[in-house]
Image 1 (tube, rainbow, N blue to C red):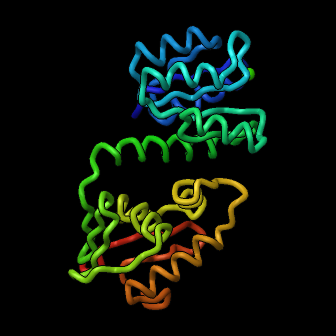
Image 2 (cartoon, rainbow, N blue to C red; image 1 turned 45 degrees about the horizontal axis):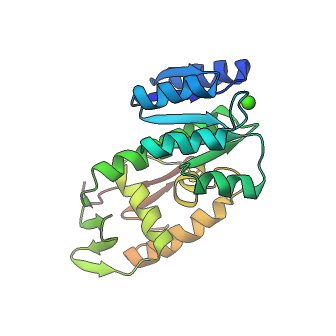
Length: 227
Ligand code: CA
């Protein structure tokens, strides 16, 4: 559960987003105007801010800068403008992620989950151990039974995303959102290809899995093979 501030002037979107996040167990406060939103974002010390860029009283990018100048709170920007330069500009201004309208509630929830997880991972960044597999996010080192594995950056991120929730089945779509930051438009084949590389580095195969298990039609999970 997180405390979320939603700054959005569209009544209908505000209602839908607030309802969806409340249903997920989050505590949502919302504002329709930039200045009210700024108050909530700064004074309420939330865990996450969702910020619509098209606000009536102030450009959302300006508000983003104002929040960022005083707070490290994760910010997901909501934009009707999907143009690359707008996205780049807002990420440069300190947004952690973005959603382009129209978005589905599933996309919203995946983004919120990923950003909140990154936030909590940054706080508690100890090594993760699953069976004989050890991952250290700080040094980006992986060992299997003490032997160092040579992984590409994306292979590491993928393995880390799975190891951080070992035992849970994670959908390929969610992995696209978290590792490649592409919840839509990206190809799940990308995940498959990286999984097969990881399998070969872990010395296993899809036919004889040990750590990495694909659950057909659902997703992937990493497990301790000795359990
Ligand atoms: Ca708007």
